[in-house]
Amino acid sequence: MKINDLKSNLTSNKNRKRRGRGSGSGLGKTSGRGVKGQKSRSGVSINGFEGGQMPLYRRLPKRGFKNPFKIKIQNLSFDMINKLVVKYNLNSSELSEKQFFEKKIFKKNKGYLKLLNVGKLNNSTNIEISYASKKAIEALEKQGGKIKLTKK
Image (cartoon, rainbow, N blue to C red; front, side, top):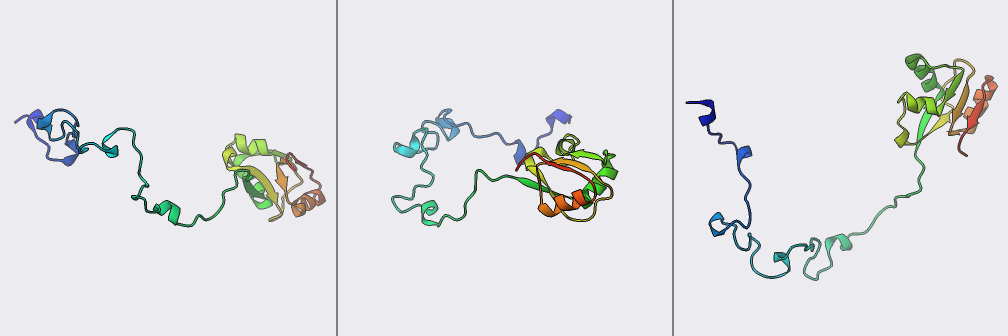
């Protein structure tokens, strides 16, 4: 007995049925499609058709709305900024949205960043960011920092 003589009885090694390869194959001539009619032809799509009855996808109520113009926004808080400055050794006096995207801290395809007034900032910081809440702007300027909004 050699290793190449071993036969596998696993179904994963089963050959696929090759249609239209002669009558001996069991799927010859019409290739298992039956005779005549729309379904025996190629390029037919009548998947949702129910013989004239109102199809299920048209009977069920349509719900919801997906706004194609929705602006994706990710939240950024003062607490997060403190942690990120320590973790990624960022220059705490100058921060920008571009920095966060370049260092892959936030993903660009998930949307713009918005600064929220959550927590306290350790030191005064100049931030360039897309959006910021009014309270966050007030808190940052009270601490001596400046904020530049790129979007409005």
